[in-house]
Image (tube, rainbow, N blue to C red; front, side, top):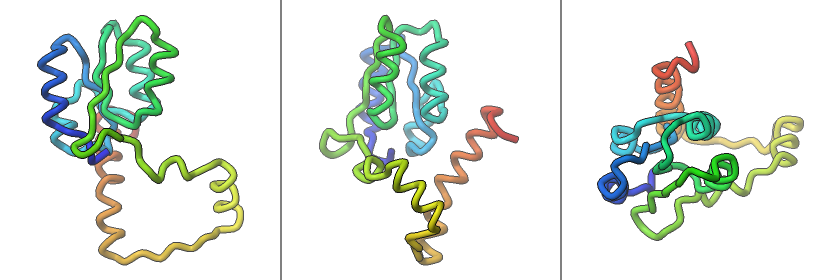
Length: 140
């Protein structure tokens, strides 16, 4: 989510002023500041389905686009390309499977040890997502 280009989002907004910008809370602040809707993947999908808007600029993993287009065939969904290269997809996200998750929870393995510094950095986007969820009334 950190790779999305603010400049390219601004260009798309100028080219399509009627479009609503949908962003995942893991995006950088500059992207979130330009968003009309900040929500989880499910929240973005629900918003697109229920909105009267016909055009959206989507700033999150590209996997959601298939479902959006499937559930809203009469609506248009545009994507923002990354700063470098053209792939916005997290290279590690697709490595996870339900089977691997189940085994991890069942066996409590593998144990991963990380430094305090890395832990503090990793906590920042989690706290940011929780804060946005509170602001949106999704959690208390």
